[in-house]
Amino acid sequence: MLKSLLAMGLCLLLLVPPAYGAPAEDQPAGEVKALIPDASRNSQPLTVKDTLRWNDLLQTNTKGRMRASLNDGSILSLGSNSELRVVQHDAASQQTSMDLNYGKLRSQVVKITQPGGKYEVKTPNAVIGVIGTDFYVAYENGRTTVVCYEGALSATPGDGSSIVESTNSSTGATTAVTVSAGQMIVIGPKREGGSVPPYDAFVKKTKKSTAIEATHRGRAATFLSAAVIAGLTIALTQINSSSKSCGCK
Image 1 (cartoon, helix red, strand yellow):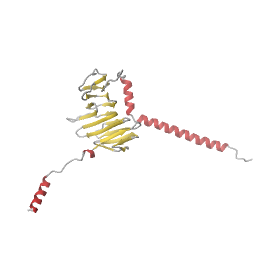
Image 2: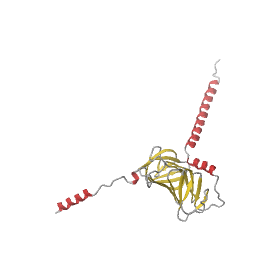
Image 3: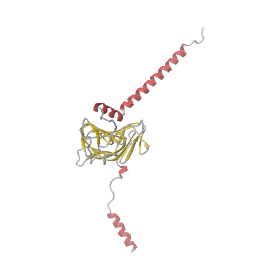
Image 4: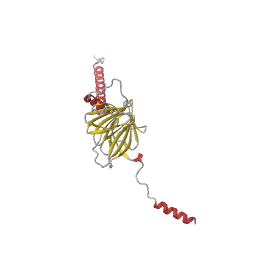
């Protein structure tokens, strides 16, 4: 009787289909292309060429910045003092979801062509969805700022939130609005005496806040200057030493 029960149990186990697919945390989403320390992934130091995976929590401190390439070709540029969770990125179905808990993020998104494809960035009080564009999102002091550099995107205020500043006549809206290239909006509490800054100047400021090359060039120039000064100092020291009297007659 026992042997019969064991045999039946084994048969049932063989009939159960195996679980396909790796756990979400094991699924790759992209790769780190450039960074300025200090930046971390899941509280561990981050390095160039590290693989990003679903549910990774990326953080930068006051000096840190990071750029990553997603598997579909989209580019993420995370500014200083920022925290971003890569919730999901399925390149085949073009399903991408990011949580910007705070800080600054620039996304250069490839065009979505798959049916049902989406690319969303969520902040604590807004959801930004795109179908292929270049845009900036920041969440600071309870306010979400959205700037569309190219293309178009949809921005939806969260419950209890509304658009308090805009360049596209959407101020006061509490539902989804379209933000086109050359436009910006702010979602969240009103700011006393606040006004929308000139777009061109603000674009330069936002792009600079997530850039890495400019900072690297600045550091390289500093290192080069230090090396030149050190070299001149050594050369002058040697010249002065050789010019001193040797006491010979």
